[in-house]
Image (cartoon, rainbow, N blue to C red; front, side, top):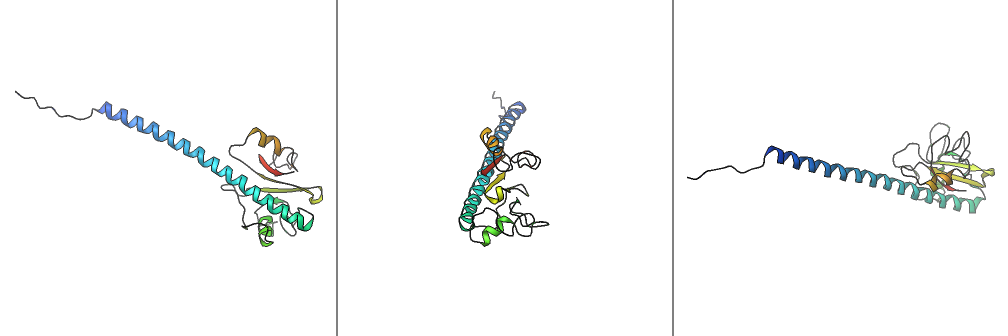
Length: 167
């Protein structure tokens, strides 16, 4: 006499497989999130290096880092890409108009407003800053030594910026 049995998976086996798939997918999603934040940080660093190059070119032409008629109250300071309110023309756009940078809106990938520029010593020193999602201890230590890094209106102490280029 033949005994016919149906073959298939038990409920427990299916639940175990579903749990394993869930763990694997959550691990993949977590690593993708980390990769995305690192990519945004790389873009921020690249943007600031491009802006730094543009400012150095501007300085070689005009002897100052204060971009004329741009920034907060036309002083060349403040949010780098802002052009509303007290910002008639952004520093970013002014550098673009002058042919110093390849894009008019150098902006943070997710923060708005994002990048800041501060001038010191009558436009002879500057600091361009951003907020990285994964800053190193060296990044944090360096921004505190830059132009307007600390103090009541400091980019690090007041605005939470933790990465800077400039001096």
